[in-house]
Image (cartoon, rainbow, N blue to C red; front, side):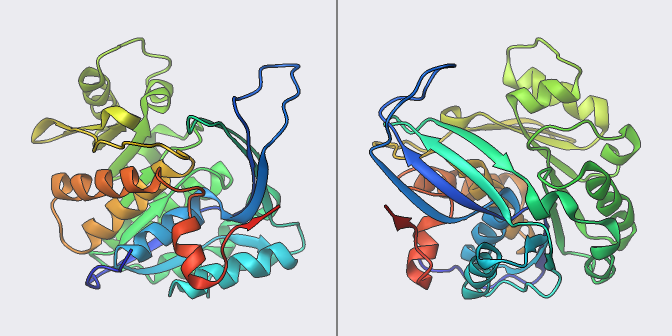
Length: 308
C-alpha cells in the first residue's frame, strides 16, 4: 500500500515492541487441550511498534519511544522500524530480552495472544523524558499499556503542558489514576476496556457506553467494536462510524493497532476526528485480510515474516 502525503506534525508513539511468534490453527484451543498448528511464522509486533508502523504508512513523521533487548530480536525490530522511516533515537536497548508474543490464529481470524514483556516491562520513566520534552503543539502523543503503568502515567502528566494531543489506547486494560485520565485528550478503548474504566459497567448499547466513559473522565472517547465499527462520544455528541465490509478475514491480530496508528496520523495531519475515524476504520478493515499486524509493510522492507 503506498504512503499518503506527509503530515505537518509528528506522531510520537510511547509503547511496546515485541517479536511475534504466530501459530496458525484450525480452531482456538480450550483449557487443557492440545492442538496442532498448520504453520508458524515470526515477525515484528508489539502494540506500540504496530501503531508506529501504521502511522508511518499513513504518511506521518513518526518517532518510537520504547525499549528492546540488546539481542538479535531487538536488532530485527529496530531494523524493521527504521525501514519504515521511523525515528528510533529514543528507543532504548536494555539487558533484558526483547519482548516476545505468542499469537495463536484460528482459521476464522480469531486469536489468542500471550506476551512476555521482557524489555518493555523494564522501560523507565527517565528514559522517555527527552522525547516528551521535544513534543510540540500539534503533535500527537500516542500511548498504549504494554509498558509499565507508572511510565504511562508519567508520559501523560509530563506531556500534557506541551500542547501535543494525547491519545491513550487503554489496551491492555490497566487501572490508571483518575487525575491522569482527565489529562488525556482522546481515549480509545474496546467494549471490555470501556467497562473497566467504569468499574464493570453492564451497559449493552455502545453509544451509552461511550457516553458514560466520556462523562466519567471528561475527554472524547472512541469505543471500537470490531466488525461493528466504532462509536465516538465527544462535546459534539455521539457518532457511530460503521465498519467496512471484509469478505475474507485472515487474521484480526493488530487490527486495533492499525486503527489507532492511522487515527493518530490523520489527526496529526489536521483531519477532523470523525474523518480520522473513517480513514482508520478503512485501514483496519484492510489489515485483517493478511497475516500479522505489520506483515504487509514488513514484507516490502525485507523484514517479512519467516515461515516454518
